[in-house]
Image (cartoon, rainbow, N blue to C red; front, side, top):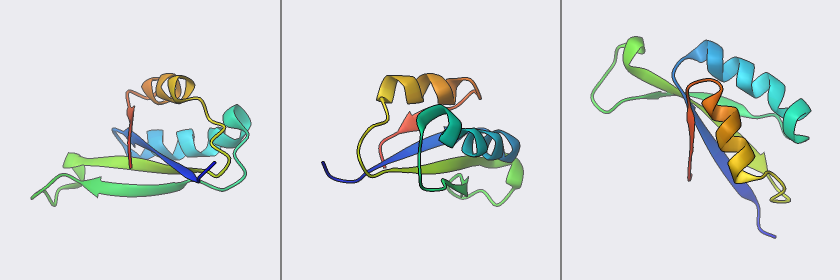
Length: 81
């Protein structure tokens, strides 16, 4: 199976950091996820930023529905990269 990358979109840095820290325990990921600030188009204010957690899933083992429920626990969602 080809490498799969998942994007969790979360509302703030704290949520993104917590979600990233707990991913390995929950889903057995071996690569550390990246936390990235995603400023909304035309906005420079940190209040208008979303945070992305980029999750590498080289074996394609993470179940999409479980990942969506996981992101929802932090008021977020999953988007296709």
